[in-house]
Length: 286
Image (tube, rainbow, N blue to C red; front, side, top):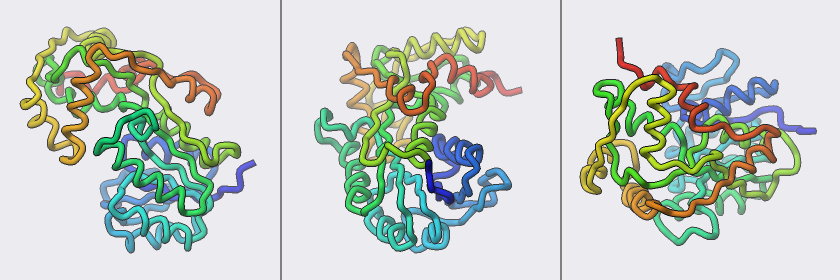
């Protein structure tokens, strides 16, 4: 039986954090949310919303004081100070939003270093910690393709045959909440993906089928993709993301969907299910 009663969710308006908030509320936990702009957060009334930013650790102190659980968005630049603040505040259990790239089998690169720095700092903090290591978010297609699909009925991307195993963000949240509220997850790193290996072109075909729209694919060069993605991906990670896309053409990717079922008790959702949940985002604006 969990003894966690109050959880601070950092990155609370993010694509995973927002689901974490909802799932914690459904479990009857007191939820605090850290967000840069509370006025625009649009979080449920039951949530205690705090203005703060992980890049400015002093702003985190009021939100974490008295919390015994922490969902931690990865910001390596300040994580050691955040860990000290959380320890002093009495946090006992931490779920880290990490990445599949942090695993031992992945060669060193900027993306791995980014996430492992956060993981190591939390491991040294004396908490009951769990690392949640998802692969690619299914929702990445929203910023990559959403505007062009809505306006023109096309998706633009490099390496159309690059393979992915997209995971529903709510499945990631379900694993994180289980790690926070249930016993038996401390000291584990959960690698999670969706249940299907799909090329980018296959993903677009699924969006077309679910939304009932005929959609086209325009393949970009590496340089064009860098320009398109730069507003959405941190500069120190962008080349690694593009390199992964190039290397994953024809790659034999591992599926870790069984982790979701093992931890949450229900199967991982398919990409088609994710699209059905977000179908309006791919329809023309009226």
